[in-house]
Length: 466
Ligand code: SF4
Image (cartoon, rainbow, N blue to C red; front, side, top):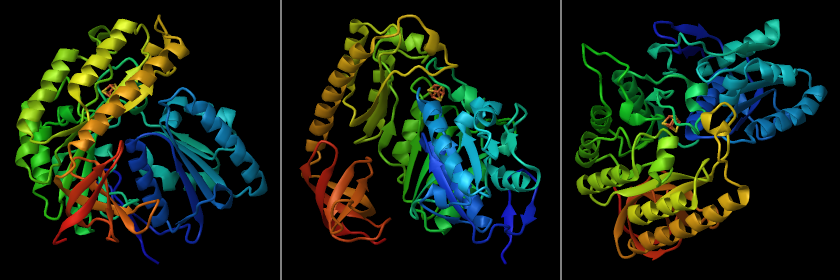
């Protein structure tokens, strides 16, 4: 029987024997990339403890819900789901139900008050403890363990076993938490102050990923541009631009992406690092949120529309052929028709390649939830539809400009609609469908033949060496 080595805590090497060999787990993830990445770690830990994944919660010995609290109805959905799990647990009293993630962090003891059949509740900084907490539940009964404010840099889970969804592509956390105070956002409340991982730890993880066959990494943080400010390495704080360059030196890593930068903190040095590091893709996710200065101020975003556009222009001047995407919230409290027209003007000027567009949803616990001037739902819907229509037009126009170009693409796998067609991704993060069967992670060049609103079609021109 193999041993599991856990390196969750600095200087602590705990060796344990897998104790749940042959048992099964079901893991459901709600929310963002950060949660998906945490779920990969949770799956890796459970599998290192001998467990196997199953696709049916009712058939699992352990059910883990990695929760999100960003949307208004997230809690309602969580308790609805927990209600259905109660019936499964009534039939199988040995089933263990585990709730982690942002709702667990925020709701703390409330979850087990409202759903007494839950065995383990753990917070966003306790991912590395999931197997220990299951052991505790087996031996002593239900447990809630939430991080406390004494968490430090060394507590950022690293070196944990990870079960990745992709063999060629991986996320790498560089910071957790956020020091900003955007008034619509629950993240600072549930994930706490920003904590950066040491550059050496990040590089070691990327090197280990490269050795295991990973070719593409996405560096993850709520605000990557403030990376390192909380660290002191020989009297100097590391900066994100240097980290990008160092990750770019790791042999075997062909593509580097990152998310998310913050417009107020983005500086030229990062753009130069992108341009001068061949593995860093010419792509940026640059969250606008609103095109109205009044609303941006109410959101506490720390920039104006003019400043946002100036930074985008700066980046485009330094990084040739830069692709861009953004986030936009429609119907923030107090948003007038004039404010919304401002957003449309900025979107028209920015010409993003794609956008994640949201209707404002008040999150209890955030300042925006209780602000005056909540916008009626029908007005929000009408504005949202106009914004989607505009962005769809721009996305299609941008895609049409790619026709006839040759792009380097990396294979994700067979297309869902046709196994004889591969779904690939360009360096600019555009989906390109290419006829043929190719291994995931393979890269080659494709000539773009057709543009659709949300994807491109191409044909292979140059098979790659990889
Ligand atoms: S930068 Fe703002 S939106 Fe992003 S995580 Fe921090 S508080 Fe939330």
